[in-house]
Length: 267
Image (cartoon, rainbow, N blue to C red; front, side, top):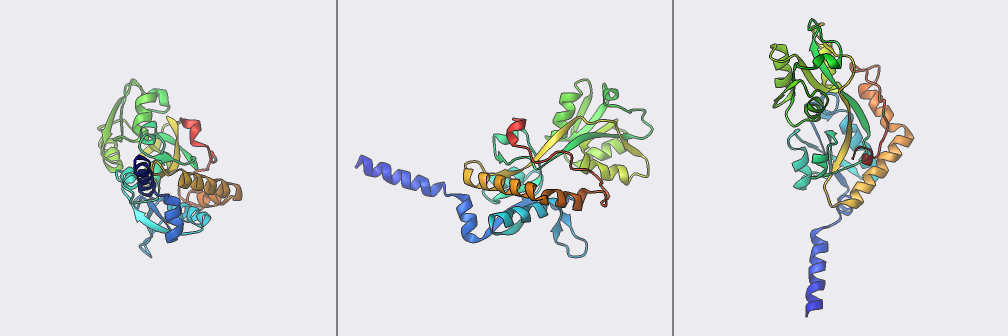
């Protein structure tokens, strides 16, 4: 009876921890979550009102590699990890920077791109280099990788955390802080649209590895997505999608300086 009970328990456990990759293959769709208000990663096309962008295209590319269709799901910055933990999405591709704290909650694929974390200042501030920020007031999004980078790299600065990018930038615009720490793809629009009022400080606080997120306990899905990324890198498709949204013909003009990198390199 003990052996029979153990066998039943193991069978139940196996069912309770079903292979998500097998589920994806069976239903023929990959539920992939992206942001819907972050150009050029995920934002509404003004003509079609469909969410488009680099992250959306990467979701489609991975789904194609897996032999299924993509089912798009909107997610907020705060909802990225819960979407995976609660099983509402198979894959999160939403400006998901790797941190050790996040890695305790979800699994990360290889980093398919890295972007510098930069600091924006007012053009007349006299702040030109990273060392000039010592003792200055720096705004950043609360619990973000730029906030962590600012606290780590600028120990003598006064870092002030705000709930979102709009609030962090408003603090700079209203002279409540001297600089804004933000990833370059997000920050560049503020500089470009400011009519010369704001500029970048020379140099970067750090480089942020960005990856895709998978629910913990799904090794088959994690391995399959990593294999898909390797294929997309080798074929040049990631570069092509990056150039489509970030390349010299875009308003961002940010080169993809770092290629696909195993997440173990940042652990």
